[in-house]
Length: 146
Image 1 (tube, rainbow, N blue to C red):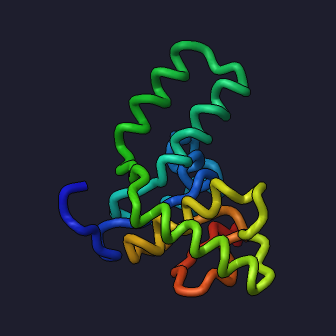
Image 2 (image 1 turned 135 degrees about the vertical axis):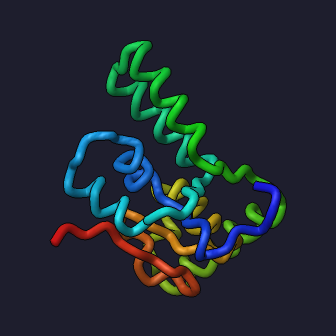
C-alpha cells in the first residue's frame, strides 16, 4: 500500500471475515461481511494470511483449491510487520493485561496483530470474533446474522 489508507476506501478484516469474503458461495455470513465491507479495499494482517493458508492445509485442500486461495489472497492488501506495529502490539497486550481484557492471553496472539493493524492504520475492523469487543480505540463491526 503506497499511500495511507482511509476509512472511506479501506477496511481491515479478521481471519473469519476474510475467509467468508474469499468464499464465493452466497452464505449468510459471507453476505453480511460483504455488506459491511462494501466496495472498500480489504486489508489484512500478515497473520491472517498465515491462518488462511494453515486452515487450507489442515483441511487437506487439493492443489486446485490451494491455487484458488493464492489467487484470492492477491486481492487483499497484506500489512507486514514493522517496528511501529511491533511496539503497538506489545503495548496493546500490556494494556489488555492491565484491564483484564482476554486479548492479553497468548492464545489470542494472532488477534492482537489483527487489532494492532486496524489501530495503527486507523481503519475499521470487520470481524467475526467477539474477542475484539472492548478494545479501546478500535472501530469494530461484528459480522452478526440477523
